[in-house]
Image (cartoon, rainbow, N blue to C red):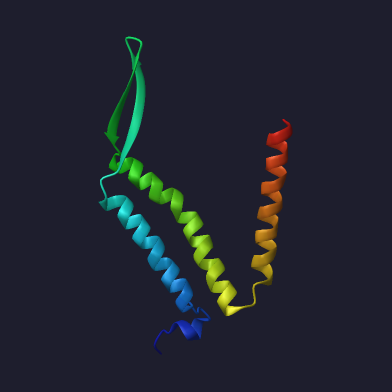
Length: 109
């Protein structure tokens, strides 16, 4: 018996495939493009700005940081297209409520 995504219940929409492609492209650009950051320091009372190349370790950390939002985004898109998102809607509602609660705590702390 051959494996097929349809037999396992896993169906990925075209929109989710496009979103995945976009996230992969962004992550590849982070790896390929020459990225620099500006550092400012004070030397002898003068402000000196220099451009510093972003290291491969920093680039990989950026990609790792983007991985979770990318997965959530692709899952959300696929859920919206495929339907039956009741549990995912509750998860997103809980995340939003936690975010608002943390924002109020930080605002009034």
